[in-house]
Amino acid sequence: MSPSSASLPRPSGKTLLAFALFVIVSGGASVAIRFTYAEMPPFWSAGSRFVLGAAFFWSVVLLRRLPLPRGRALLGSVLFGVFSMGLSFLFIYWGLVETPASLYQTIVALVPLLTILLAAAQGLEPLRARGLLGAGLTVLGIVVAVGGAAADDLAPLRVIAIVLGAACFAEAGIVAKRFPRNDPFVTNAIAMPVGAAILLAASWINGERWVVPRQTSTWLAFGYIVVFVTIVAFLLYLYVLGRWTATGSSYSFVLIPLVTLVLASWLAGERITPQFLTGGTLVVLGVWLGALLPDRSRAA
Image 1 (spheres, rainbow, N blue to C red):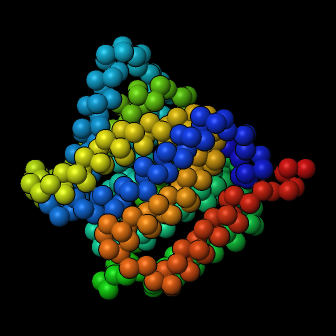
Image 2 (cartoon, helix red, strand yellow):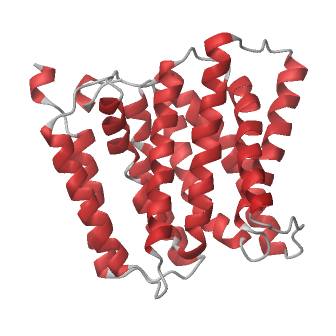
């Protein structure tokens, strides 16, 4: 994995198409998740989507008789499930209860920068001063965006939880690159039950009611999450990860807020203030400076 876009391999046309589709599909995820809260408690909503997703992927694995991984390949799939589906959505679903979808997606734009910081912490690449400067700028951007978010009862702990969820996303990308690669259907078939177990355990501990939705809007939102986000988006993300670097793949998290911003304003009626836009711009600028700006010295 490389710390700069200058040293990233050029992705193919198919990879870029999958990358673009992942951005578009994922842009509506946080808006749909907040719609499910009308009837479904957060951890139950998160865990049940991965149960249904796991059923789909295991059906494909069994019908196609795909070989199951062993050793490090199996461990990598399990850890991918822990970070990308279990811990990440544990934090995110709890944080989204009182956090606007547009603000959530702005915070998740930190993923490329967090990927570089975590890679440096794990000894995979050196940490540069530019990365620290970008991190400081993104933190400032989040503070400004939180101050301009259209939510009178915005809870700081919910925002911190979403930051932790973004860090788990970043670590999942590193895990996917450090361990032997499996077929995407096999990886998801193993990872999703792991994530579902973590989330359903949290639901049980919190005493949530495991209810079936009754409203059409809730079913539409939940169906979108299961089909397009849990199945399609995860396949697209693993496809891109398998053909590009973890840092390159994480660029999607910078672009997704643009889609979410439009959908949150249109469908959820979230008011986008100038202060929020200023904070979001600082976040994107910090990520660009710390993670995406080409490093001329390395290129030379």
